[in-house]
Length: 272
Image (cartoon, rainbow, N blue to C red; front, top):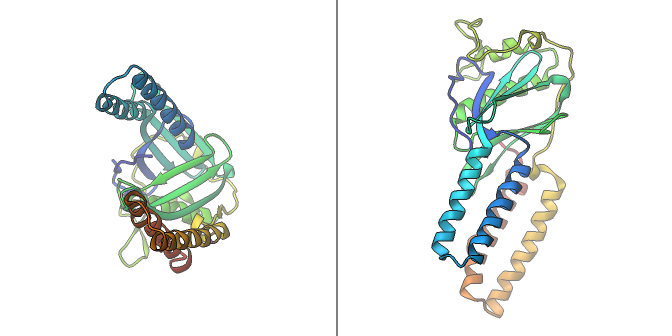
């Protein structure tokens, strides 16, 4: 999902994070829809015997067009009663939507970091909820990293302590020393409207923090498998030779990918 920088000064309100997201459904469903439609159109264009450059340009245009139509500005708001998500679609013919997830419906979360296709590190926070879409995905990939970090930190404080008052958490300002201090105007009105009935603090339990993929046993198993296959391919290249294309794949994709897995799974086991 493409993220955009926060449009609200998060230093004064840790409870609001503005990003980009899909208007309906989860990421996987929307990606499958985009791929299905764009590939179908591409095959049809090839069937019409159009020039490959024309087909490529149209294919890219269709992909970006579909993503634009399916996404919109997404605002996540931390409230005493739960998490509010407000969506304003890019396509103005679609009506803005809003969902509210009470703390009782927030089952667990996972916070970590990874690398995108551009080999750039980004941080993410996946929150698993009982109702649709089942998972709220937030990240600082191509967005304001400070705004994301402050929202995620506030969420983790709320998740770890069932007795904490959400209003107090989102109106605290983190200093460079790591000590939370109250804002000069702690009762300043929120930048976005919220429903009063959801502001009442409800009794809730602690929200479970799940392990990241790299912290799970399956990651170790996969890494060992990658090491074995990587060693096999290197030995094959040295003893039997490989085509230039396969050597490129081995040196640019297979070996760096295996080394990254080794680093994440066995060397840097946490996300700090």
